[in-house]
Length: 484
Image 1: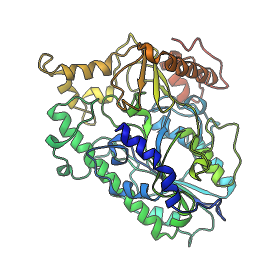
Image 2: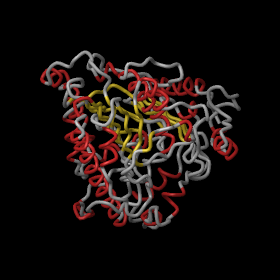
Image 3: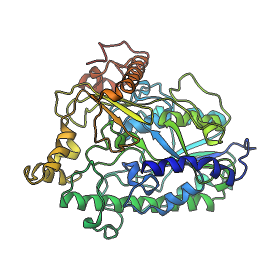
Image 4: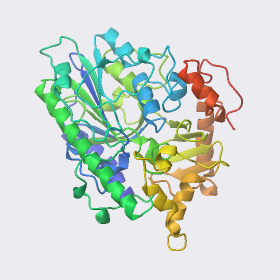
């Protein structure tokens, strides 16, 4: 895999040349179409080395544009990562540092940023950000907004087609189509395409028969989601807007399997990201430039002809899209506050794309995520088969449970060689210098974010945020040391 990645990166200059000239600029403001999957682990996609899921439409989109090898989000939970994408701000800056919480009342998002530049800004499907005054999107119908409905409602493409149509509108659009698959329950798609016994399970997932069955159902939803991507792109063409639109596809955070969603491991925070724009972004290329969800809003504002803002935590990666730069940021940062998804378990992390450093701020506690481990109808009954496996015959299953529930204060991984981050190198002297460099970078970020650490992951802080009275983050008083 490592040799394959090296060859792929070396091919980028050749592919850029073969793709032909990329124009220096567009004569008019482009439209923006952002397609979001829901809870899809990036490397379960074939585009990132996945060995199971069939995703012909996502693969075809990648051939028309640029695939980011190193795109990340700050928090592997639905609401915080969406707030980050829509605002260009890290979770503590915009205030959404927990799932099922709320951003600061004064937070500005894509509608505030792009409306003054002449854009209509709408969202279809799952919204899941609050308060509404901070996210005043046009409501575009046709896609199910409920990520836990069984089954997902069929989509009606007429709403997005009308919103995209240049015949009906004189202004450019920014449209987010936020799909609800493959979020649980895994009931959509054709699971017969994925016979459980034939699957190749990722190494961070314990191999039990029920786990295989659920993984099969999850893969079927990925393929179902891929079909929706194809329908959305066909609708864009039918609306006559394909040539004038920047299309972004992202997989959001990792799936609801242990070690993905609700964690700071690579399979939680690493996201798929494809950018396509005919004649402006070279086709069928990959980039190792490090980007984060906080960089997307500044990039859209930049491409729309607007100016950057000091309110942004992220910065525009337009130069990467245009092929005039092959690097962007030095570090991507991660934050996890476990309330209300389970008992307190605050985590912070940083990656440079090669290494990942994780700091568990309450390592003496058990990690518990009540949705994944609770056994409800919308959750994961396979978890009981992990706990019930024979520890003599199946020590591998015990090790997966232990990895998930008991974590040391520090974890350090050479992620480029170990993408599932199974080998903790925190005590390996050969990597001490790199670990120290990332640890210092994390300290600096937490200081800049006025992040006191464990004090954020408390009922008091969460409840205050829901009232719009945030206790922590930039512009609020610090509360204690970020070390504990």
